[in-house]
Image (tube, rainbow, N blue to C red; front, top):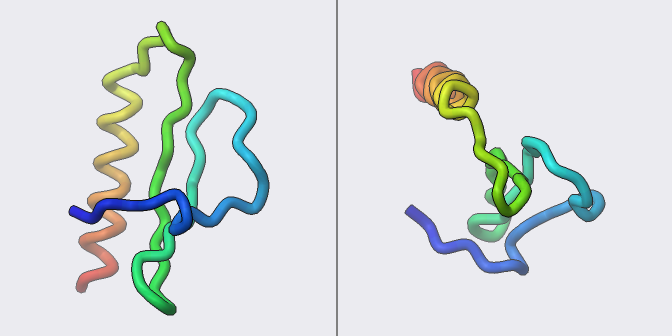
Length: 67
């Protein structure tokens, strides 16, 4: 894993609402990646099924990219 600093996060505009967002992260000079960020309320419960679906889709996309 990587430790990400605030300076590495690339936002087109501030996130001001709840939801799932794709955010770009600068890993190294000239190398960027996209990550999904879940923004929830303090006491909101995120559906485990929703997270599992998102993770499965991300893993499938990653596997296809590596082939």
